Image 1 (cartoon, rainbow, N blue to C red):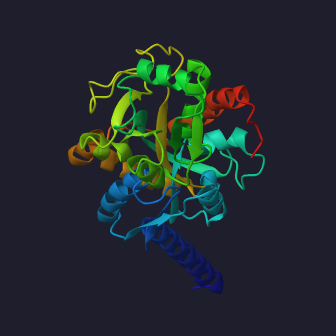
Image 2: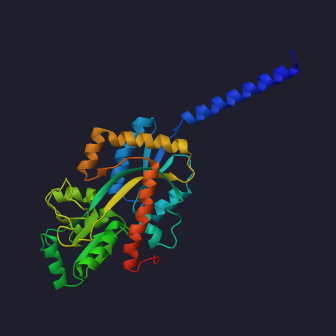
Image 3: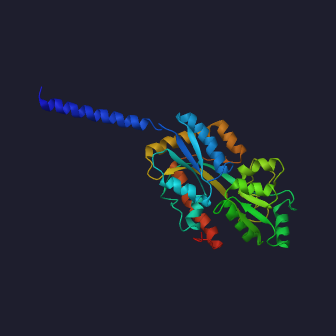
Length: 326
């Protein structure tokens, strides 16, 4: 046999071995722990979602899943951290509509909502709840608007952070009801709720999940929900639309993204795993009990939601002359 034959055989063997190594490396994902970054403190709705999905994801992929809470900076601290992370699938992010809001609200963010992230899957959509402390002398939206008009600037309404739907919701309420409130912005949902429960603020607009336990304990009085229809978990609480504000309607979305440049195969693996988790009857029931509507779907579907959300919230931000002011 010639030397050329042995040389060709060796090259074929190396190529086959390289292919096997490449396939093995791809099949191994994940081969180390995954971290899910959250822009809210423990107890906020993104944290609730991250811990539930993370627990099941760990079981499904056979690797630990850690939750890394990075609150503050109107969500920009966590968002920019993930945007700079290695695009290998081991750093994920519970992205909320805050990334779309901040696209217009902030000049400097450290990321771009459309180009810095690779969408994986939209997990949920949820209503915002307007709730007040029990001592506030109003049981419905009309009653609250009346007392707010009688005492301009008296009633302090808390919201989770700058750039959240809660903060913009307070501004929408002022604009559409033609009242003057005292908006108070916190670092995240939990300290905002704590101040309302401690009578340091009069009410809050926040994603329903973290407020729901206090509503069930009668420590918060629900006034209205922000979605077009009532939520099944609080069927007796009317919407803003029902109570005379026809343009006050929005939901809050949350989902999972990775840094831009994460391989398509890794995104596909994560998309499949999280969709399977969302379809699990026990997980679905748990999310629905938190007033989350389970969504799921393809990465491109979530990308479309992020893009359309930028446009819709830009209108609210510009109406309140907030564009690029932060």
